[in-house]
Length: 447
Image (cartoon, rainbow, N blue to C red; front, side):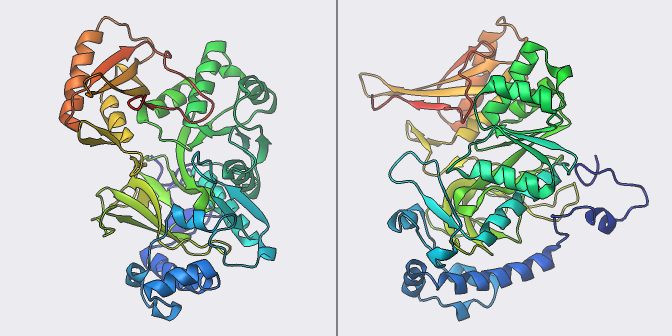
């Protein structure tokens, strides 16, 4: 495997020479990152004091800009949460003049008022930068063509994919989600070499390309997937059906500009995050104390150059862990793991706390299974909860071994999750497909 994804390294080429080929990914070692992070943290606190909402939070905590002398002083700062965004609606936590705001984006939340985040011109350029870095790490360059099947409008995804693609110099085809027929036609007509979508949309596209026999008529080489957790089996299925060189998971959230905060490389050992743009802490969600590197906790982020709405120890409620070792690809940027779930999306079943990522881990152990699953929770007349996990067979696998397979998975789940549940092995492609995020947990207990 090449030490740097997407690049072929000559035998006499040094790491420094190889890094110089990247236009947007900086060659930063740990000492360099620490200096940049301290400088950015001190600037962020000064910027936050320009906004009345943040100033009140910081003064209540007894913290002032001059108190930040080292990175360890980060722990002096208070955390903020989605409630702080709701309290400041419609332009929460604003730290610049409204005249300096050039764009807003909003989250896709389904409860209460949407989270609206403001952007200065520099903020929009940083959004484009982090996306361009992700595309570059995935091995893309100006000669590539990106077809975007992500949401446009208030959502950050469309603007992020397009601005990052254009910054890298790629031809950009902004189609948006859904409209599978148009996507298939444009893939043939315009020859996109990269496709950006949710994992669900990517799988749907791959299955349709396979069904229609279009593989020889398209030029796709890479896939960028975001917005939902993708299992290793799903990644392999997408790559196989589309004949890809590689496919990559991208991370992000509206509060942190949007997509592009992190991406995995060809080593697939974790997601490299841009530690010169923000600091990640992994904290115990109850005590808010740091957990040891490599252990799971809640991801808390602090921005280092956001102007309009800085983030100070923002609680994402995403459960994750830092990868404690450097990536074999050679890039010094640190890594975090895929999101296991959200601390507020936890399933409580018969007194056991379960996260969706735990089902994915068990399913990945069985080559007879595909990557799609669905969880259904019900409650009987005796107020006893029941959980059924439906999992698809892999393509081409028959039903003859279902009984033994069901028993094995059930036992594995009981051992891994410490709860007994029903398992149903179903036909390939029988679970619902969607252009957006798949709804994999259906809770009918209140019904």
